[in-house]
Image (cartoon, rainbow, N blue to C red; front, side):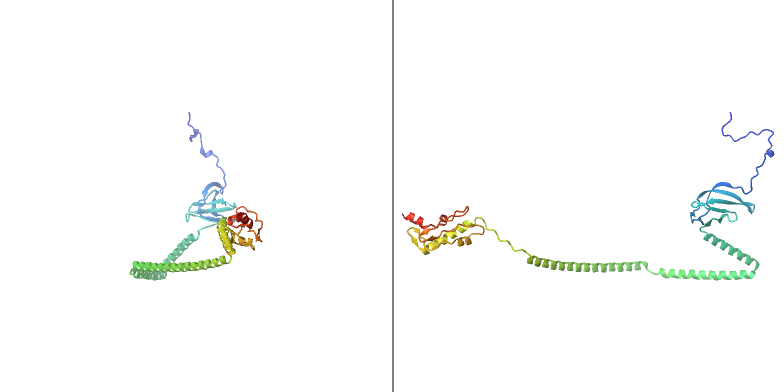
Length: 322
């Protein structure tokens, strides 16, 4: 039993490979290959940047009538990733590099051009020196002058470094630190003075505002309401009224054992009303005229009667004497 996936083929004894017909393919046949961009480029159509190493499915063909030392040169076709414009570049075996043909511009080309220019100048100089001995002497003189200038510049740099070597950097740093501390101290003192001035100004302004507010409050303060007297003030006023009546009885005179009131009214109603506190009224005393007592005022609750004050009428005196 034969093995699977074998690569050996059976060739019969009469096999002749020269009899196999050759395929007639065109010389500029294109193949599809997978490659990476060999350098950074920018599309001319849309301006899209294509960085080095980006992978493409490219078409490859052999450039006709271009050979370097027997090595064929290949051309590659790729498409822009944004606008699908065609970009072509080919191999450069002479410089081991790639050259851009059309569809894009190569970035970072200045360094390469500079290197190429230096190489070209060096090659031209060698060709001139090879055929012209005077040119060799002239080039050597220029090189010597350039070398002398470089040495002079180097000596100036050395002298400058030596002069700077005598400078005490520690002392300079110390002096700079001290000056910085003094400056910070001065700034701190200035800040403190400004803060104290602001605090003093705020205190004065507050005192002025307080004094103004007190004057305004005193001017706009409402009058104080009258204090209401105590309900028991009548008890203190009763003995005063009784003493006043007794003094009037002594001035008028007595009749028997009871005081005799005659003439005009002994105590006016307005007098009692004036002596009593506000809101409390006492019954007015009766008037005695020609030995007759008037009808006493009705007794009010919470007030004392005439008998409690010690005032008696003529009728009571007559009944007592009888």
